[in-house]
Length: 198
Image (cartoon, rainbow, N blue to C red; front, top):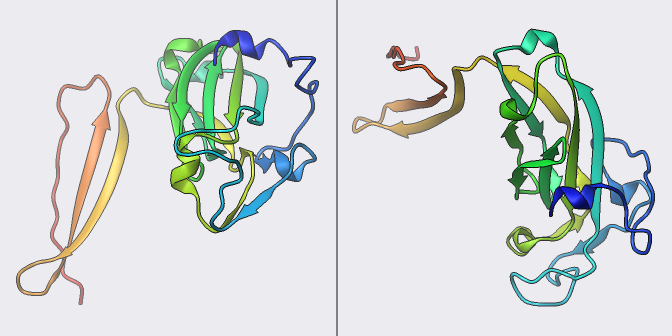
């Protein structure tokens, strides 16, 4: 997909601009139909094939990046898109998300300026190679299933937090906390704690 495909609908195959509720499945807003399956895929073929006529929605909005975000990291977060989302800022592709039920985050700092307007476009493709992996007893819908937000963080930020429970040799519960910090900092202070319940 390129920025060229965002210039407008194909008059022979697409529909004109419409307003849709986000979050929301386009299959529940009069665009395309939902499909239920428990074993049979909603289209013919073998992995990783997808149908040639593959419903795709392009969501476009224009926002002003707050002036207060100057010097901060700017993140576009797509809560969930079924099945693939390609994110564009002012016509430039900035990322790809390939999970229908989990969020995708795109660092768009290099593509925006505080106090200026930008056009954000999300191309959501209904069926993908990932559809074969995600297939289970479910309804198939296309669209943005969860909220889409734009937020800022400090340049140094928590990128990932993982909690790992376990048991030690004596049967006591343990909890390891793994934290990934991202940004320009050169060192990260680390503190540890040990606590007993009861």
